[in-house]
Structure formats: structure tokens, C-alpha cells
Length: 280
Image (cartoon, rainbow, N blue to C red; front, top):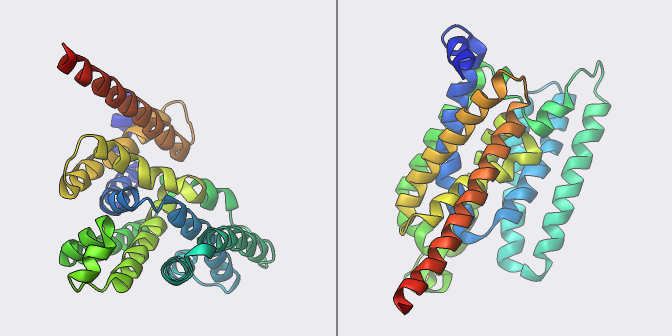
């Protein structure tokens, strides 16, 4: 840990990594809470894996892979959202198809790019230690948009997440806000890909929020705690991985997973003790 702290004061790449982790944790905690509450982790997974198609196509055309990721993520979110709202019996098949086809398109485009020199593994598993300053600016910009929209429409998102029928009766445009929420999920996925990669993005999106849900009775508190836990897991994972030179993304996810197992175990034990005390 001391080696990590010493390096943090002098190494710009490590400072960028920590700052990127903290910025990513903001969107991760806020939107991850909705993903957990609405139980749409599989939808988020479909969006995440469809993103590779956009990244591959953008690189093939000489454009920014992150720009391609944003477009692909938003398109996938709208397709999945529309199918979920109007063709629910095909939802699983559509998500699975986008998941597989997006990955396949991405691999094909990247493999056919002239002068191919992209490290595909960095897209799949993340490379937070190589995140540039311009990416930090983009993440901060997306954070502002995501958090701003969430604050502006918090009541509508709350209603849609917990009781769609009641929301419709209250005059909330459920279809619009469901699609808008999925678009925010898509943008958050793009942010997290740069931290832990496509393969592990769903874990970082859901685990901090799931743990926060064990100790929170309101969605707002769940979000605040999830943001804190996301920051703890990402910076803690970086610190743990630094000296032994372990993959940062994998270490972050392992740290998060262990914390989740401890959290769920503690919840089960507390639940068992509660009825026992009442019985006495």
C-alpha cells in the first residue's frame, strides 16, 4: 500500500486512474441502483456487449472508439427498451442476439482494420492505468449529464422503477422514462468499460448497488452508499493490484465480489438472529 501511495504523488498515469475511478463511481452508484431495483442486469449486459460492435466499426472508419461505443450503446438501449415494452415475449432472445452479434461485429471490424494495432483485450477487460486526460473529461461530462437528468426526473424514475401501473395512473409517461433510463444505463456502461472492460462491466454496475441495498431503506440513500462503495472498490482495487502488478480491472471486480459475499452473509446471519430474539 505504501508503494501505491508513494507512486500516486508522482505518477501522472496513476493519478489519472484514481480520478477516472472516482468519476466512474458516481454514475455507477446512481444508475447501478436503478439497475438493481428494476432487476435489469441482463438488459445492461446486452447493451454492454453490443458496444463492441460500435467500437470496432468506429476504429475501422478511423473514428474514436469511444464515440462508436456511445452510439452503439444508445441504439442497443433503445432497441432493447422498445422490445421490452412492446414485444416482451421476445425480450430474452433479442438481448441475447444483440449481445452475440455486437461482439461478433466488433471482432470482425477490428480484425479487418488496416494496420491493426488495437489491443482488443483492453476493451474486453479494461485498462484503467492507461486512461488519458481527454477520457477523464468525457467521463466527467457524461457524469454531469447522467446525474443532472436523474435529479431532474427522480420522481418519475422512482415511480417507473417500483410500480409501472401506478405510474401510468398518475400520468407518468412510462414508456418514455423507461427508455430514457436505459439510455442512462448505456452511457454508464460506456464509462465503466474504460475502467474494467466489457466482460466485467455488469459486476461493477451492480455489486456496489446490491451491497448498498442491504443497508438502505430509500433509493436516495442506496445511491449515496453505492457511489461511496464504488469509489472504495475501484481505488482499493487499484491499490491492491499496484505492487504485485495484477490486472487492475480484475482486482477491482474480485474486491467487489468478496465484499458482496461478506455483505450477503452478514444479512443472512442478521436475519436469522432477528427471529430467534423475537422467539425468546
